Structures are given as C-alpha cells and as structure tokens.
Amino acid sequence: MPLPGSEPEPLPGPSPVPGGGPVPGLLGALRPAHPAAADLLDSPRDWAPARTSLGAFDLVPVRPDRDLALLSQWMNDPAVAAFWDLAGPESVTAAHLRDQLDGDGRSVPCLGVLDGTPMSYWEIYRADLDPLARYYPARPHDTGIHLLIGGVADRGRGVGTTLLRAVADLILDNRPHCPRVIAEPDLRNTPSVSAFLSAGFRFHAEVDLPDKRAALMVRDRALRNLL
Image (cartoon, rainbow, N blue to C red; front, side, top):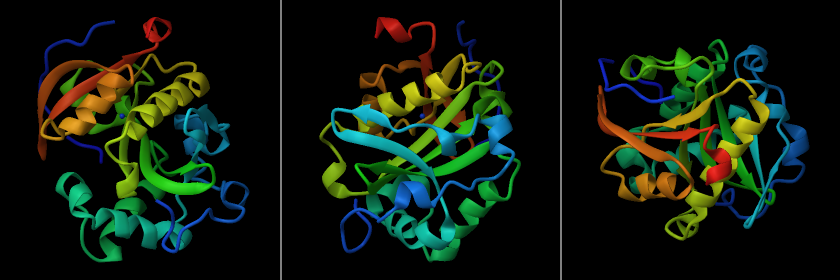
C-alpha cells in the first residue's frame, strides 16, 4: 500500500485456493501485465521461479477475474485486516488492485505461488517513485515490497522469512539497477518485523507514516553476499 511524508534521518549508502490444491496451468496461463511494468520494474511476470527450501516459488501478477475472490477472502482474515485495512466486500479489494493495475506500472500486485499453490500476496513497487520516498533519501530504482501470508497454516513457522529472502533475491537478480530492497511493516506487527530481520533486512529507523508507525527495513545489494 503505497504511502505519503516528512523528513527521516539519513539512510546510508518488503493457502490454497478455496477447495484446495494447485491451480491447473496457473504459471503458464497468466503473464499479461500492465505494459509499463516492463519499463519500471523489469517485468516481474517474466522472472523465473525461485528455488527455496519449501519448494519452487513464483510471483504471478494478479488477474482480478481469477484471483479476486481468494484475495478478498485473505483480506477479511482478522489477522490480515488489522494491518492491511481492506476488509469488506470484494469491491474493496478490487478497488485496491485497480489502482495498481490501471496505473503506470510502478506497483505490480502478485500472487505468491508455492509449488503451484497460491498462498501469499505481494506488491512489488518502485519505492523511489512512491510517496514513501518522502520519508527517506531514496535512490534511483529502490524497490519496495508488501506482503501477506494467506493461509493460517503457513504463518509462524518461518515461511515468511524464507519467502522474503527469496523475493528480495529475485528483485536483486532481475533488477540490476536496484541498489536495495525497502519495506515498511507496521511496528506493531512484531512477527513481520522479525521475519524481515531474519531474511537479511536491517532495521534503519522508525518512521511516522500517515496510517501507521513503521519500521523502515532495508536489504542492501552491497551487503548481500555477507548475509
């Protein structure tokens, strides 16, 4: 959820579908995305799956006609709604997706698909072009991530940490001009902050955003091989 801002301290130089089971042909069936995304985010729809200890993980750009019911279901989970504030009818989630899909491609909403099963939701966005950049000295091509884990069974057992590391690596591998990956989880969301730290992000500062007090998290390309 891209955000608006003020002045931070300097920053030195983030469940199966109902009924269960994989979606047949999901990875091959999707792939059209906003054309501008190819220019602003180096075509996330074309990134190869990441190999993780949990299985093959792929970011698949959202297609509302196929994915809206599942995403709305996740947004109405109280544990998710507390931090995403998108609970309500499907139209609430649809409007949130439409803002990105009808935009200029600076934010791409994706399903996180683990071994063929959608189990998480991600937003990959240009942090340097987002209102978030008002809160820190952004560098060109800084890339931000938002995420939620959809299935209760996938929470609290290290899944988030594994996938955060995998997605940060995907971004750095596929966006050669990106110097760092940025995230701003709600400071109250202790499990999320902990997952970012375990995934190789560093805590930089607390920042007051319009809708939350956030932990500004950074994963630097320059430090990648040291983690």
